[in-house]
Image (cartoon, rainbow, N blue to C red; front, side, top):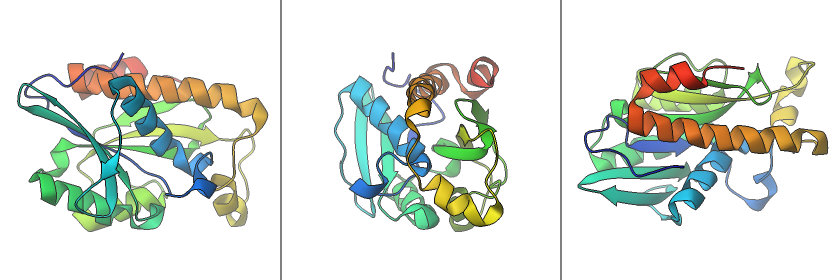
Length: 199
C-alpha cells in the first residue's frame, strides 16, 4: 500500500507522462497517467489544476510533501509542465521521479533508473531538454509487443489502445509500478531498484 513519504525523502515529486483527453485515456502512451491515477486512488487524493499546465494531487505528512503531477501539455512538451512544477515548488531535478511508458521493454516489465538518456522517448526528451539535465530518476513501464512495429508505425502503435488480451498484464504492471513508487519514497531508489528491476 502507498503511504505518505517519510520525512527527508529525496524524491517528493512524481510525474506521470501522458496525453490529456478522453481519446488518449487507455492508450499505451498513457501508462504514466495510469500509474499516477492508481497512486491517487490509494492515497484518496484528487487531481486539481496546478499553477501551470498540469494537474496535481498533494499529500502532506509532518512537513514533508508528496506531489503527484500529470502534465496537460501533451507528451512532446512534457518538459514545460515539469519545469513549471519544479519552479513552483522551488525544487530541483533530484526531487523528481518520472513515470513513463517504454516500447523497448517487454509488456509488464519495470525499470527504475537514477538517470539516463531519453531512449528515443519524446516525453523524456522534452523533460531532459527543458531541464538541461539527465540527472533525474525515472520509472520505465514496458509496453513493448512481441514483434516490434516498423519505425514508421511506432507512433500509431504507442497511441493505440491495449488489446483485450493485454489488459490483465497492464493492470498488474500498473499495480507493481505504484508499489515501486511507494518503495522509492519509503526506502530509497537503490533498494527499490533491487526489488523491482525484474522482468
